[in-house]
Length: 469
Image 1 (cartoon, rainbow, N blue to C red):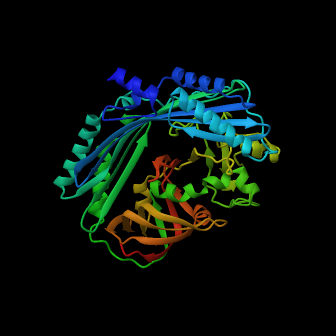
Image 2 (tube, rainbow, N blue to C red):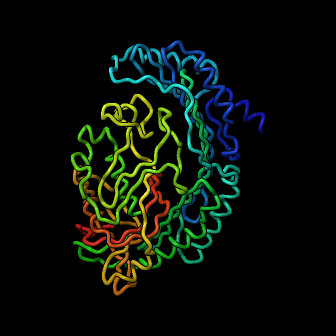
Image 3 (tube, helix red, strand yellow):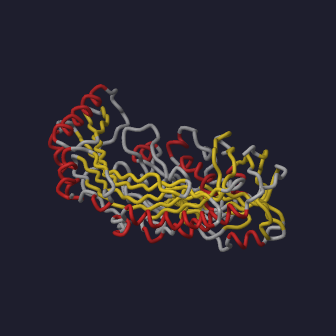
């Protein structure tokens, strides 16, 4: 198996089958060899190579039964070349010699056909010092289909015993990446990931829970299933309540679903181009005193590379200080234009977006969700949201719906499930009305965007109507 696997990996981009795991990711030395081959093949003024190998394994289940197990090992090799101030990028998923020649040639052809970019900066020269992060877990890397199947079996049995139906996914995998250029820059990173998501269904109710981490041991499918199952039970026979302004308790996933829409507003390029809700508002009080927000790639609950798409070391940035937006994140280009220093948040070039903070961390509080419920005379507890769309970008008004566990709170207790609501709510206004915060945890949305966020108790949250489902 190992011999065949090495042979396949050297000739093609992709290996699939039930035994592929993150343990099969190529070593850093192998990624170096690929990069060196590309740099030797290029005759450009400057050349950049970005290589990523991904190992992904997925066990999917529905109707209390596993119905799919897939695994894949893939390579992405992206080459950017520069000729006389012109630049372009070409990508391949193969690593044989002929494919590497073709991708270098394609990048060169595209670059020569581009208009000259007067703002293009030289590639970073020489080695950089990157902060150490440790996010590669051996147990996650060596997880097998049998490991995932045993966990799913326990979840399915729990649901069946309660007359419920379970559906979801259990994924394990990892990635190895290397960024290098012809001016001597080299940056490398490896991490693993484990994720379990489950929805428990009943005739007129549902519950949901999800968690991910680089460490398999930090993800507890049984506990997540118990949580989702209990939500489905509690929300049976949901009541229809009147829309309007409500006190809401937003669990961390629901908070992420909303505040995640702010991430690009902290990009210097967005502010400069007047596409940000913070354009003309930096330094002004826009949120409550209890709202402090960082971008911190080194937080113990965060993941991702300690460098950006150009190899600039990431910095920890205070974005909001006690309700006041203070700082932005910068790529090399936006920093030069705005006469400041880059913060290590730039995307790979060329791009039109500039930069963004992908490691958002909210300072939390001390109240648990249970304590928030206990202190609420009348309100709504929200598990998560979906179908969210932006209505007003400058005021950050969003619309969407609740789902998978929405509850009426009365007299400090959950008394019933309720029909789902549609909401129309400004995120900025919401963050001015936060009455309580829980400790912040790692949370993830359905599209795998992660943040470190607390649960929030919010006054005056605007529900506009009861949904039909």
